[in-house]
Image 1 (cartoon, rainbow, N blue to C red):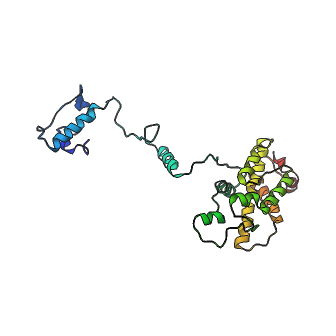
Image 2: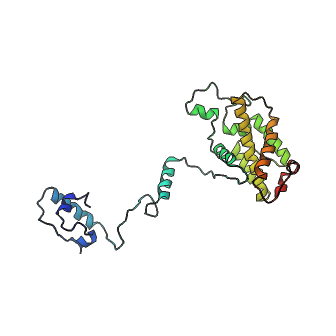
Length: 260
């Protein structure tokens, strides 16, 4: 009130008085050092009376109110939620985190799912001048996340090889979203799904690594190398994070589900 009604505050003799003590029976108790002289003082008095007449005072101690939160009290979580709702895109995508996969694999898959990789299509969309936006692996279609990890001939070959190794069907023709959905729909135990999901995460990471090697290092590895890389890296990832049972390399090659 001191900042909003400075003239009345200067007239008040008791600077530490509470508003509830000054407002009794719907009238203002005056304890000023002199009478109101009109002008700005009269305007402030009229304003504070109008404000108090429309307010309901309670016995609850005064506190700051955070109007954007349902709790009506300030919290860091409330501010974070407000900022996220205003600045982040609306999505129903649930972040997937597989404990059998290292951090780099989980973060990479998270970026793939959100289409946040630096594909040529994304670079062109951000206004970066690049020679062409075709896929560097097949040179036939625009390079998007859905294409690189789904409909590209290299990706199709890789997922067919992984499916043959696992003796299951992985659907990825429309991109990583369909690929993860096919894992969720499998009629197998949750532990086995976790193994398949870890291999899928490793597959996407290996495909992107193969793509970068081709773009930046003029890599000459054959696409068959990707499947071998997936089998080897996924074995290292899973075997070092599942402590229940040790599995040999030979067992992993023949039946990766022996872990569970």
